[in-house]
Image (cartoon, rainbow, N blue to C red; front, side):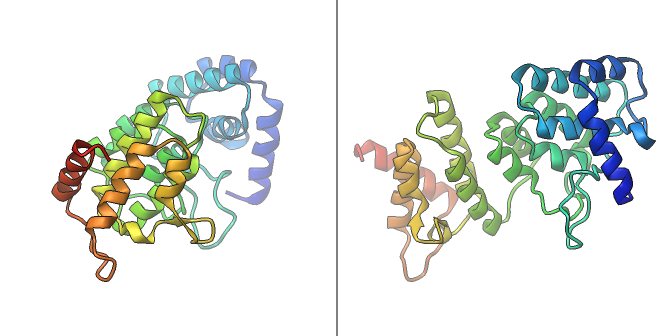
Length: 252
């Protein structure tokens, strides 16, 4: 896509009100291209939206496009990283990394694209880490159910992201979601000693504790105690569960 074409679509997305766009989508071809490239327009609007009602309506509209035959294997050119190092992201890659994409909308895309998960462009965006960043435990679990996993080094990045998006004001449900995602990431064999924040000076489990994630923080500390610092071995999944049970059985 040419730069002028991208600019024109960005300008048009700003002029298109959410209500007008929603009405247009109900009658238009979901795969419309050219200067009214509906996929590019709605993804731009979802990326930039801040009004709760607009976000809900845009999600409904994107789900309708999917139901009406949107080609979900398409790339989204207007939201690509401005770097020659990366190519434009697939729809599922960019959707995973947009906070305004609801869990239901993401899963609707995933249903269509589950066969393509292992064949994604080098866009600089990771689908699993994207859902962690957006605090979408349901979407994260749906990806795990499709046997998508992170390499150990990326699991370390996932733990950093999980820690960064955790908040002292998280609800009990959000704390439980963080614990679930954290335990699943640990099963992907990251080197826990490599996961540090703030210019690699603070261990992430200390930050988790400060943010109210005591259970996950305690699990990480127990795993690191059991792992010799010299060898920095990654604990087996079974060992992780055993340590978890034993730690809290002792009341630690």
